Image 1 (cartoon, helix red, strand yellow):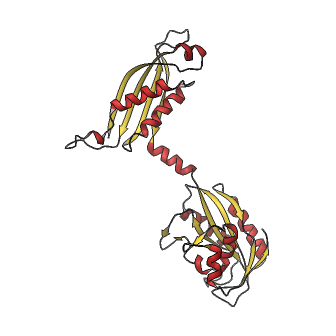
Image 2 (spheres, one colour):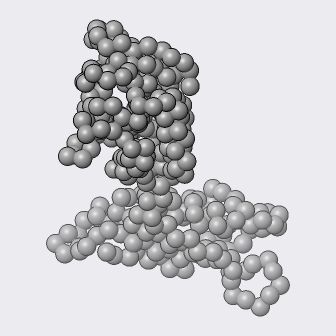
Image 3 (cartoon, one colour):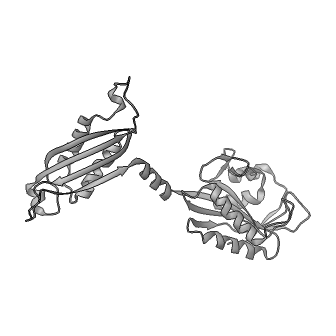
Length: 293
């Protein structure tokens, strides 16, 4: 990597909290360092592969003359962010701004601030703050079915990374794959999760809840106290031995589609509105509304 340095750029500006600073102005000294993601310039003498320091200086002058900042903190951050936007080559920007004749009666050379903007850290922080919409399907046909669903939803909501937005009505549904068992109670849950919580981590969390209930019999589609499936994780698509997202059986499961259509009537399945999709499929399994959540 290379570092571009702009040292001791002196400009006159009108920044500061005091009225006299806004009215009379004062001198400011700028020191800027720009780290660019470039390994070597050997056999590559093209200006487009770096940052033109003359353009950076013009940018700083434009920001300085076009604004009156109260705080040097805001001033330095504005400059750093605008430099970062100049090129994807920019990895890190350090902006130091000093008042060389500050309006204070002390024997000192200058006062100022320094701000560091790191692209990788910013992207990581944005990822952490990003919220992703997820949809879960829950079912139970052993014991008190409604109590099982409510307990599972409560356990899901206890995660500080999962914010439950809405829960569908409860539907009583006919067993689909293994007919010789009691009918199910099913719901669909809409939640918003922290972006740093991956689909694999969500599945691990949900499986922990399932097994805490004593999830199911040996038969994959047999009776179970609680069953929780991850239907959607935003618009992410995953195909792996352990996890497939969106859930691969959504289109054939009326017990999922009906409560999902209640929750998100704008959803599309195979490029068709979910309610219209359900009508055209002519499902034979019974799915009956029991009660609102």
